[in-house]
Length: 497
Image 1 (tube, rainbow, N blue to C red):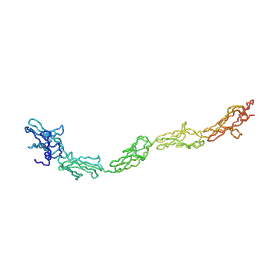
Image 2: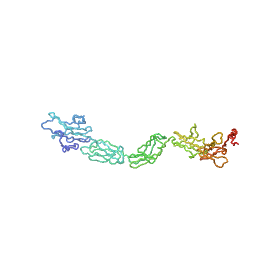
Image 3: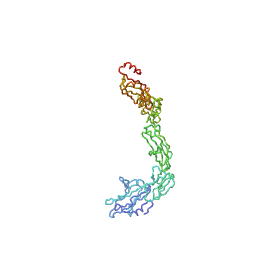
Image 4: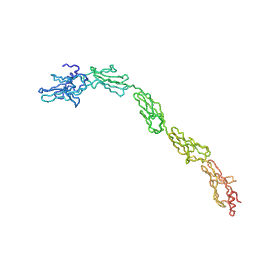
């Protein structure tokens, strides 16, 4: 029997013959791959006992477990099949103009005169391939340095074929017995249109595939956008977006004040605080280089806070001093409106960031506070207390008992003064005497007599000064003196004779 090239499995029949599943039908191989539009010999041999007579022999084609047809009766095979029978019990099937729909399992069955049906249950699987190109790539977007795998057809024909690869209409390469074209590390020169043909089947349709190779380059045009783009007020949500052009895509880091905040294309701040104000930039980095964006300033607006009052001079305020109160606040934009208040007074006592009193006295003493305001809100400070420090004033002497003093009485003189801080040093003097006669806020004489009579005064002193009282005439009377005359003398601060 002569085997032309298209009847590609005659030699397989000779070299691969094996015992079939049943004892009388042998399918020489289990599967075959053939090229679409070609002619193929599906090899088969059968042996049956001599005492049995065959009544019929035919081929079945199983497209799926649910669909099996008789080849001789299926219109799809009409004019394309030829059943080979010879003395050597050759049961092979020739199939011409192979189509995609021919893929499936072919089985030989024959009926005996006794009614028994014999067949090879496994059959031969026929796979049909074309020259369609399948592409597998390292990534969805092919980049310089990636790999690409081209696959021509769905299977490799059982007869070794030569695959011819073309790029942009020109021969790229030939591969004998291998339907793969592998580009390990593509460059820009590998861009183009690829297709394959199978030697001897050049007329077979082949779809081309276009390969685009993206160049690799370091980050460029790195910038930051801020959303929202307008005024940012404390409590807003703010998102920074890093925009860069690079291939492969860059990894993004966010930096503020030399510190890395986080990574990712965006950096979001919810319920932003004033502390988030500052300069931000992003750094884009891929395997080729890193590049920083220009810094953008995030300026968070907020109403006055941490409002307080400072006093100048900061030390003790003495009566007559000039005093200035300053209102200090933290706000953005800075507060422009300031009002000054004194506790227990209904209206403002002043305006402006500073409030001055040119000659301070006790009438100004009290608790003061300020209120700072910008267009986003206002806040008042805590109150500060202002108290004047002054030397004693309104110094006077009182005598006890306050009525008529009779010789032998106990008499106490008290020094009364008004000062801040209160006077702690008191001295007592009697007119026409060179030195003090006593000290302390009170001066007592246990048994008063005429030798003590005279004009007494006190001097009160604190660390800011001293002041003396007016003199008070103190005199004792004796029994029998006319009371009215004594009173007259007392009232005029004259000694009674």
